Length: 173
Image (cartoon, rainbow, N blue to C red; front, side, top):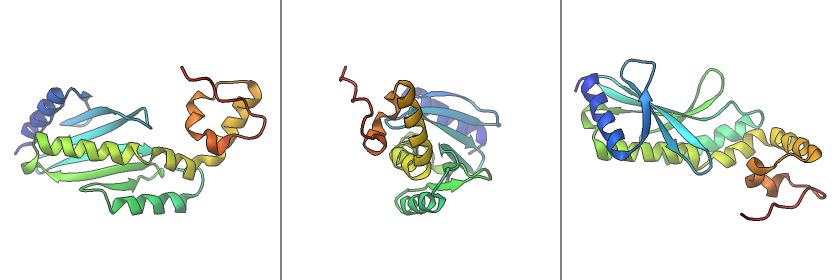
């Protein structure tokens, strides 16, 4: 299968599935945005070649703290990721990456692949934030509380960050 044919297969799947996508900067690259529950969205790069489909999605930036615990957590999760693995770039940012043979790529495999990517990036997101950025999150929480700023985007972490005297939880909409 040629890279162009593989890209056509991927484009057809993305269109049929209703995924938001655009052409990437590299030859035969498609960039897909998948909506998440814990992360707002996961951006996935799919690069088509004559021999393989490469997939890469950003998970979190280089942790501020607890690198050993973050990487240990990711390595344990690697044991359960079919066809993908967590990896770290030169800057220390965490990605989920993989390569599948071009010959076997069809709509069913693409659906499974993107599902695994989304779970790998979205499911552990809050735990990774706590492991790698708790100090920064506490500073942000304290700064917002001291100025009466909204705590909305930190609500998922209230149980860890809240201190006596902090504002009460906002009423449900």
